[in-house]
Length: 201
Ligand code: PRP
Image (cartoon, rainbow, N blue to C red):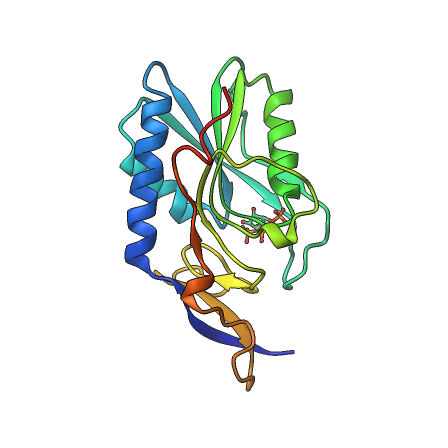
């Protein structure tokens, strides 16, 4: 089946406002000492860059690769973690940064991996969450938007390598379809923060 761009689900200005809100919340929670951001390539590249630039606390930023989808729209169920060099997070406070939590496998695998690497604490920041797709129960400490089960692209997210550079987050629909994959904006839930997604104490 061929796909084409659908409607704008979350506009660039709404993303920008939400990222600033998340950054301020993270800053408040990590005011003393360094925070190590570990962002998941490739989808989180823009979210991580914008989040880090909006933050004022002492931080480092690393990127890791965790691939689960391949070239299609369905997850393979496997998560492969890789990165260049060493991830020096022994005793560190770590914030996993991902663009979207779908099945939860990537966040789950990454959290376990970072804990194995000796992190003192691991929390998660995700711009999007699709709770309807969850296979693994993972907690998201800083969440941008909860969205319905639609395939989305833009702001780092792709379909077969395309559309990552879109400033807005948009749906993808079957070519020639009449609205497949399109969600009205009223379905998008800007998640309350705080306290609903505050960090675990
Ligand atoms: C996407 C996304 C998350 C993961 C979420 O990555 O960036 O890392 O899937 O899915 P999950 O909750 O079902 O594990 P993807 O594997 O598509 O790689 P990419 O970011 O390089 O496009």
